Amino acid sequence: MESNLLATIVLLHLAISVVHGRAHTGAAIPLRLASTLFVYLVIIAAPLAGLALTRWRRAAGAWIVAASLGGALVFGLINHFVVPGPDHVGHVAAPWRPLFRVTALLLIASEAAGVAVAIWSALARTRRTA
Image 1 (cartoon, one colour):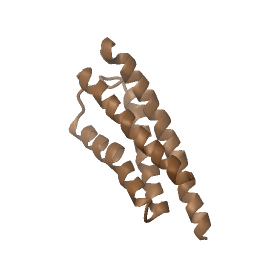
Image 2 (cartoon, rainbow, N blue to C red):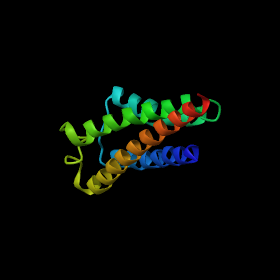
Image 3 (cartoon, one colour):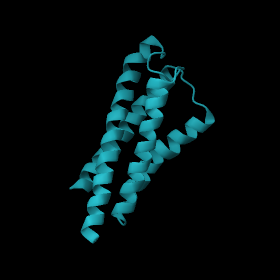
């Protein structure tokens, strides 16, 4: 059951990320190279890779999902809500601010849920094999 829930959260997170990316583009919010690499590798690719790995190595894949979504959560909290700058929800161009803000909040919710479910899944697998 936890694997289906984890898959749902990872895929929902991907969908929210795509919409949030559109808000970034529409509001002309540039990302530095390091941030762009982090977004594509840690926020987009790693949860999908971890989810795929759960088919063969459930605990290892779940830990990858937990780590990547945990990193995404910290990255999003800092960049969208703490550090002032063009990526902060309060500084986004007015026409794009509602979509940007809603997707930033949805990302936080999906990432927190993903971390929790991934850890639960990894630990449940570990307890079953112990």
